[in-house]
Image 1 (cartoon, one colour):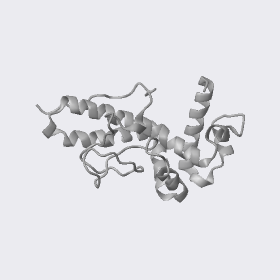
Image 2 (cartoon, one colour):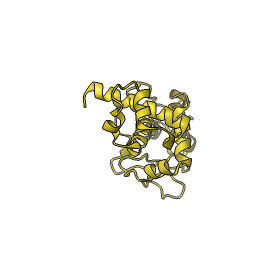
Image 3 (cartoon, rainbow, N blue to C red):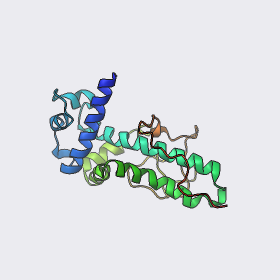
Image 4 (tube, rainbow, N blue to C red):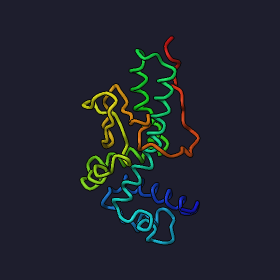
Length: 191
C-alpha cells in the first residue's frame, strides 16, 4: 500500500475510534467514518476494511500493537535488569502501564472504545473471533505459567507474562512510529 493509502487507513481508524466511542459501535455508518476522516471518497472505509467488523478489529489491532510492543520492551528490560525474585511489582507495571499510556495519548478515546467493545455484543463477537495471531496476548490468572492466552481487553490478572516459542507475543509485531517507547522501568530496580 502507498504512503498515501497508509495515511488514509490510519485516519479512518482514528476517526472510527472516536466516533465508535462517542456514539456506539452500531450507531456509526462507514460513510460517517469516511467523512470524519476527511476522505472525499465516502466508500473509503469499505475499501480499506470491507465492513464494520473489519474496522472494529482494525481499531483494536492498531492500538494493541503499540501496547503489546511496549509491554514486550518493558518485560525484556525487567528480565535483563531485575533479579528474578524481585520481578512481580515490575511485571504488574509492565502489564498495565503501556495500556494507560496509549489511552492517555488518545485523550481517552481508546478507553471509551474499549468500554463500548465490552458492552456491545457485535464488537465483543468481532474481537472474540480474531485469530490468535491478530489478537492481543495478555496474561490470564487461570492459565498456566508461560502459556499463550488470547483474550479481549481488560483481562489482565497474572504474575507471569505469556510468551510464544519465539519469545515474542505474536500480535505485537510492527514498528512503533511514535518514538515514545520506554525500554527501561521508570523506577530504579531494587539493589
